[in-house]
Amino acid sequence: MTTTRNVRLPPWSLAIAAMLAAQLSAALSMNVIAEVGAAATAWLRLTAGAVIFLLLARPPVREIRRRDLPALLGLGVASGLMGVMFLAAIERIPLGTCVAIEFLGPLTVAAFRSHNKQALAWPILALLGVVLLTEPWLGTIDVAGVGFALGAAVGWGAYILLTQSVGDRFGGIKGLALTVPIAAATAIVGVPEAAGHLTLAVVAACVGLALLFPVVTFALEMLALRGMTHNAFGTLMALEPACGVLMGLLVLQQKPSILQAAGILLVVAAGAGAQRHGRRQRDSTIDMQEALPYPPQ
Image (tube, rainbow, N blue to C red; front, side, top):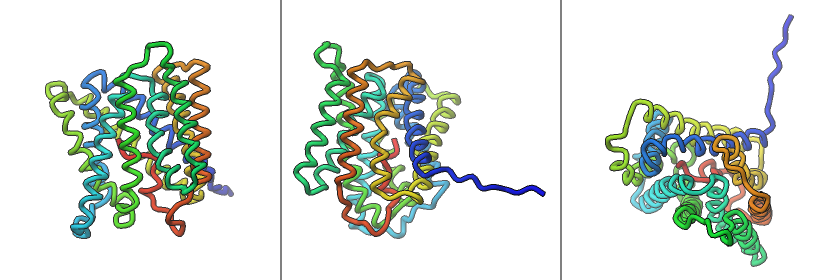
C-alpha cells in the first residue's frame, strides 16, 4: 500500500522564486533587445502579457465607472512607461544596478507613507547604496542608463500610489486584464523600432518572457501571500535588487565589485527597514494587485 504525501513549500520560498522569475525574465530580455531594441521588446512583452491576461480573465468592463477612468489610465500608462524605461536602462547599465535604482521609487513611497520622519532615512541609505553601485568617481557612469532607471523608479512609485484606488475596485487578475492592455498601448512607441525586425522566433521569445513575468511571477506571489503577512512579504521583497545582481551574474556575466556588492546590501537593508516600520492604510485584507512588487513590464 502506498501513501501520497503532499509537499508544501514554505511561503518565503515561493516569494523568492517569484523574484528570481521576474529577474530571470529581465536578464533573458537582453537577447531580444539585441535583436529589435529596448522599446520594441517592451511593447512585445506587454502585448503578449495583455493577451495572456485577457485569456485568463475577462476584464470587468461593465463595472467601470467614469470616476475609475483616471486611475485606470494612469496606472496603465505608468506601467507602460516603466516597462520601456526599465528595458532601456538594462540595455545600458548592469541589471542589479538598474533594479536598485528603480527600487528607490517604492522605497520613497513607503517612507512617506509611514508618517514617521525617521523613515526618511531609508531612502537616503538606499541612495548611498546606489552611489556605491554606480561609482561616479570612476567617470564611467552611463548617464542615460541611470536616467532611464530613475524614470522607471518614478513609474514604480506612481504604480504603487495608483494601485490602491484601482485595487479597491478591480483586484487581482481582473485588474491586470484592464491595466496591462493600456500599458501595452502606451508602449506603442516601440512599434517603429520593431517594424521590419519581427520574426517568429522573436515573437515566441516575448511570449515566453511574458509567461515568466508577469504570469508565473504573479502566480507564485499569490501562493506566497496565502501564508504570509503583508509586512513579511514586503520585507522579503527588499531582496529584489539582490536577485537582480544574481541573475545579472549568472545569465549576463555582470560581476559586481566589492563596493557595488556593499551598495546592494545597503539598498536591501533600506528596503527591509522601510517596510518593517511602514504602516498600511488598510490592514483587514491583502489586495493582490497592491501586493505586487512592481507593475508588469
